[in-house]
Image (cartoon, rainbow, N blue to C red):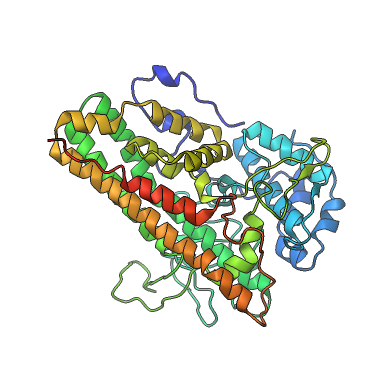
Length: 469
């Protein structure tokens, strides 16, 4: 089970270690595993064949023949997290194998019982989460190095990446020394080309989607550390330390925006040891909007606030009534929740209710970290009472950077969801499957996504401080 934080209120200062947050990787799970004990081989064999089993419509038959295994042989927190990742990926494939028109509304006990058991042990819901797809879905390429870079397990095999890029378009071959690689994916296939098979093209874009999101989490690490420094600086108080922390937080938020931008346009240099923008040799969509909309998105969709599954999902052997859970969503990332609490950004009741519900989809120690930030002395009040114009300017620059990030996120969602929807409807012939209709203007978490993103962006702008007098 996840280690529990103890005596949080009696600690003299805020630290990341008290909440099991890594100084190097932030909310990413350090050193996640890629294999389960041999007892759980039936799970791994199905998980590693998911693309083929879904594409051939054989997954449900395979799961129905799967033996019932309990979780008693899972030792340690990382094995529990990997088991949750494996079982929840299989669950999404089982439910959505035949698209939104024919979802499975009963999860067989051989899958439901172990998924619920490991979920209870972890304090997580029994569905695919951001903490699965991203936080526990990577590893270091060179564990012995001080700054080893990233490998996203379950995404792609043998593509070496120097920066957040993926060269899987036809005719592109990246054969370089790298800092990032993505070895394989439960919902991806290893294909060098995007051809007529939607599962191959879907796999290419899924790999890009996950990798970019991992990079976003990594870009947030200096900001998370700066946030801790700032909270402690307010408690001391130390204006110089607070100013430095706010400046670092702004830079981190800007880096997050740049990392998110890799979803759309990628420039890279094929040299072995340096990253430059002057020798960019290629620009491409990292995640194809049409493929994301038609192929990928449904597998992140849940069974709460989803018109395709209004009754929810019955977990056989667990409950006599169907259960309702939201799908994986960026709102389940702890990063912006922590930044909002620290900066004192206050959202509308509708947005706040949704965001607070998403906290139930985070690892418990991450939820506790947000609550600790919320209970800390108000940064806004401290800055206003200090009369320090440098602090006020630095604070406002953080808020402006956060608003710019949210504006960029809104633009990305518009491209990958709102613009993609009418294009998908207008296609007369395509190798892609019929796009989902039930969540046409909703996020995978179930929100009216554009209205939600505009609201949180606008409320962020409203947090800008003005010097009294």
